[in-house]
Amino acid sequence: MHKIIPVAPFDAVVFGATGDLTMRKLLPALYYRFRDRQIPEASRIIAAARTRLGTGEYRDLAAAALERHVPAADRDPDTVARFLDHLRYVAVDGSGEAGWEDLANLLAEHPDHVRPYYLATSPSLYGAICRNLSAHGLIGERSRVVLEKPIGHDLASARAINDQVGKVFPESQIFRIDHYLGKETVQNLLALRFANTIFERLWNADVIDHVQITVAETVGVEGRGGYYDTSGALRDMLQNHMLQLLCLLGMESPLSLDADAVRDEKLKVLRALKPIPAHEVPMRTVRGQYVAGAVNGQPVPGYVADLAEGRTSLTETFVALKLELMTPRWAGVPFYLRTGKRLPQKVSEIVVQFRSSPFSIFSDEFAREPNRLVIRLQPQEGIKLEVMTKEPGPGGMRLRSTGLDISFEETFNQRYPDAYERLLMDVVRGNATLFMRRDEVEAAWAWADTLLNAWADRPEPPRPYPAGTWGPTAAIALIERDGRTWHEDLG
Ligand code: BG6
Image: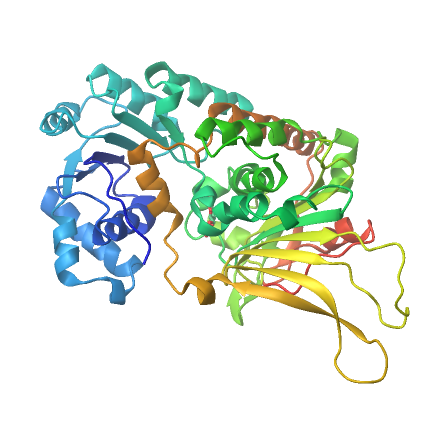
């Protein structure tokens, strides 16, 4: 069992406390941290939303959420009851006047507590909530604000939100969440790269042919159609989660794990993203939208039917693209990224494909496959290095690619905490290493905007793909045109 260091006592105020994110992710994450005694007894979780509810009613909602989202084996009734005792509810109108005095009175009971304000609301409320926090004197040195994605839908809107929040909170107190950074296996990319000399020496264009990043989901839009239809796969997954993965893969070694040291290096990667010229966008990017099909043998409707609004939509639920980084380490190495909903498997994986050697002492009869490092982020977290080996037995030198395969589950034999558990505790501790700085978010948008603008200038409907397939065939052509293929041995 790893050592758990309790954090300082806190009063965490969650705005949007009746919403899906709070119920599905935040309350379960806080429950686990409480169960593992990381949250001190004096701490409170203050749930805030517009609905008029009493604390008792909110605790009932929270209990139901824990039942749905925490496995029974992890729910000891006594621990659940003690956890619920830490919840309070205040009805607060984020953009209006109602409820703020009540919140202020509650917080005044513990002036010394760390105060994370978690904004699990629509980003359109971020500015108003921050203004209200300031107007009611609720911001001090021990306060921090946590912003969920999406931070804007393009560079201009992201800047506007950052400006509004930045008027009342200094950057050091703003924690922009990208929950991928809280995933254990994503943090492990830092260990893999910078704690292992064998990889770091080979991590460059001399040795690496190309990199693939796949983030595939089996789910559709799951009742989030209102948000998703204004977003699409590029904004929802690629601009943030996938570019963050790219940063960790592509960055130079930071001087330390200090928040700004890491973020400075990630920022350089984002700034090194080579803009895709408008005329190349149709060749280098593929947009898709799922139509009816079957996932895991179950028939599922298409995206338009999922939206249930009786209208067509031009929003992409799949995107694949090829990008490059203009750095000495990576010049000329293509990165192929793809993500989509209603694909055949839920899997997030990075494939680092090494170059093949130009000369071989082995007969051509036994095709040699270049080495490949497969980093599985979820599920079945692990790392596999594919190496050529001799097949046993007489009869010549027969070669075969086999995997040096590490399964983290088997190695560590313990539960993987959800990303939010780690991130919420980091907020209380004031450790911003795994959060995005303003300049990072804006650099990522600046690059994404070039694509969004090119798509908008030449609007074309996304290519249909049946649910349960790996996206439109054009995504296969995107990589095969370069004489390469998507890694298929997923999971
Ligand atoms: C969220 C997206 O940020 O990430 C969702 O808004 C997506 O559309 C989710 O389903 C995927 O996260 P995970 O942790 O399940 O890979």
